[in-house]
Image (cartoon, rainbow, N blue to C red; front, top):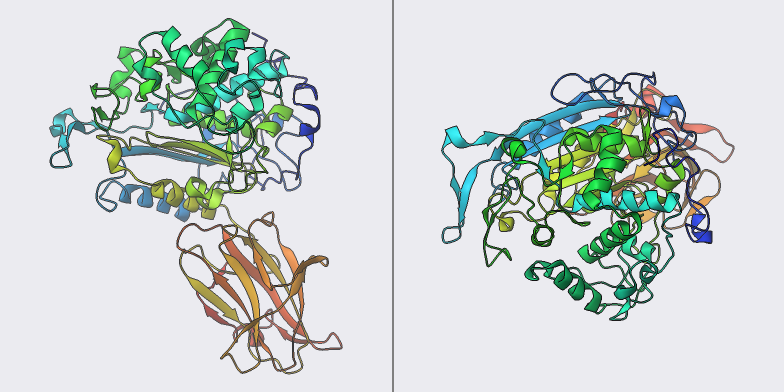
Length: 611
């Protein structure tokens, strides 16, 4: 194993990453986070770990230099120290606790551990509910057989969880490390490392397609039914692809199982050894491993009463062993599932990646490799953005934290990790949502609600004055911000900030010539060159302020901003500031900064906000 100071220093070569694939879009912009002093390595456990706050100013990326200020370690601190708004973090916990009750028919989880931070500061680390609550599941009554109160185990901040598919991130990191070292090539065919793999139309599948779920594999096959390694390999070798390689996105456990086999072939080491030597030991992730020992069991969250027909195996209440059937059949060590961890360890991993691959004095990836892991390779499959191992821009569990650069993953057991380079923030949600049975959980409502609250906790500073108009972040609603009549007005100027669910929610500039009975869209430009011919702005705009200019369709027209959201997900919302109307000579006839003008704005669903 390379030393901490030399590992991955040079980053991957163009050849290793397939030549032209190094062309990347968009610079990363990081929100200002208070504090950037160097500090000591934090210790695990429930104490107050030492460390430093971190982050860099607008316009500088987290992976650009690898300097000491960016190699932050974690410490606990206040919301203010993290550059977050405390009321919204408090609401995050309240909303998470609401899912301990039926939502709507059963609790989404028996308990959870929540961790949220920004820069080098963990501003929230909270345990709710129970780590072990049920002895069994009664399928006849669809109820959980509850343990007596004295035998239940409460959730703690250090409770260890079966991560399920969040394990895929670790396998992906291990693969990218081998790409850095030249032992693995991203565009190489899998058969270059596993010659037997090529049957069933798989001869052209590449390593990149495994990492981005574009190999053509179907989602899953019951490998656990084969009692021997040889039998499981035979099933994999003989598997016929559902789609030709590279033609479709289809999430599949088989991709990461195959990647595990490649890693073990080229290194001569088991995946559990690689995990320890290359990730958890250098980073000090002391409660992250495959196959936790029996001594850890009292501190592990239980999962499912695993019995047919809902489970492929009859194992009873699974507690301290991997839940996934295939991972269990593989001895607990698998590329797609099987890793156990706690929230603090995952926060270390999050901070490492947001730092560009380094944590304290340890480096596990080069900044270039982290950049690639957070870059969308699936532009041919809109809605399925995917880096190397990491999912990108997924509102269905990232909520309003989702941006084109936001990376993360979920696990079937109720786990998730979200990293937002745009604001340098991170969120860990670990829930035992299959306890006592998998059918009680549906969707990702808690993940979305919690992520929305963390996104709202990142302040948006007004563009001009002390406050700006804010649309809010409520789904399934319409709000309007209407200017008063301004005789002689010919042009609108204002500042606009927006981040909305792409293709669903938008802010529309409208005018009315009949006093507000009917409204028509008004085309406008932003920043002097970007046209909005339909009068609408939506999706991702970089989370920065944009200047708006619009010609009024007539001298008697009234103007308003209308923001409409659907019932599914929301973004961070829309802000409007500096509303002014000018006549044909450029003389201001309305300026919201003048108290007599500002008080005449009609706000329906919009509020004045300083953050």
